[in-house]
Length: 269
Image (cartoon, rainbow, N blue to C red; front, side):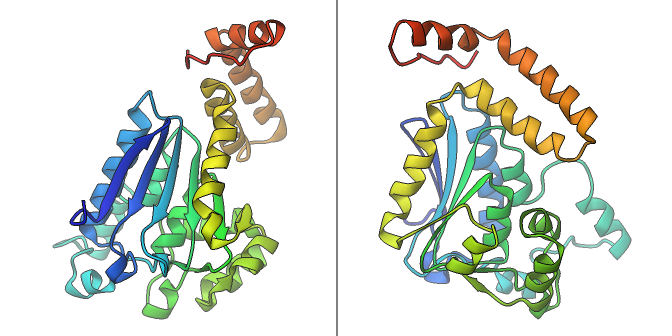
């Protein structure tokens, strides 16, 4: 297990995906990128998994971002292509980065951020539904300081969370914000002491799992897709999805369990 740079474990219907390269502050290299994509797809397809939580081993960082040693060697470049061809390859249909893989998960996703949560580390969090930060977290996107820009949804998800002016400040300066400021501006949902971070993630996951899995899945779809539509179109989408949920077995189980004064037994169908 120590040799594996990304760990995957399912416990009590929660899939834990853990960055396990603490000696390098969980810098994400090409091998880890591939493992993260694979594990995200695995969690998404596993009917037993209801919530996915991302965390990082080691006290100092969730992740300091992409491995710049890989970048310096050209290991993350699209080899043999012109800039235009490389751009087309990056925009081709499919999943090419961990944030894309996280965003494609249909179940609730939670990041537990601590220490340095920077670059790819934060981009992964931005792709999650919920971000819980330890009080020692320092968050930011430092790509501009090494000649890149925060892609993989970084600029676009950032602005949707904190607004245009704050997103410009964070992305263009490369400065890190502490956990308290991240909570104040809405970059993270909750702020907890470092030693309570895992517990806070479990509690959040358990609160989601009290709800019917299909209802949660389609609530997520309605909010994300509806936010890009006009209100009229979004209401139509909401109505269509709500109608689908009403036809499920779980929609019958919920009221029945309430009347019988017992916890519902969700089947996810």
